[in-house]
Length: 107
Image (cartoon, rainbow, N blue to C red; front, side, top):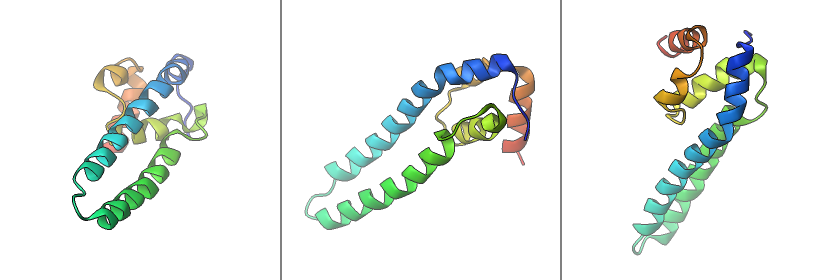
């Protein structure tokens, strides 16, 4: 696997927590919507919430756990695919890293 540039690695480590928090906030908003619209279907809402948490827990783990310089490209791809990393954040990475990520995501 490719290693990203040192400057990209430092930047990614700096913004990772913000991206993770934004990703979790988006998930919590969906959970809130399910909860708010349960009206007489509590078990159905509970089951939807449970399934979503299981699914999103896997997504969070794949995207953010064990972040290393050697797997950073893969992690950035997941961040972009999940719409957690903004265009502005992505634009701060080197052109080389952007090109690699874009080529992977456009396959």
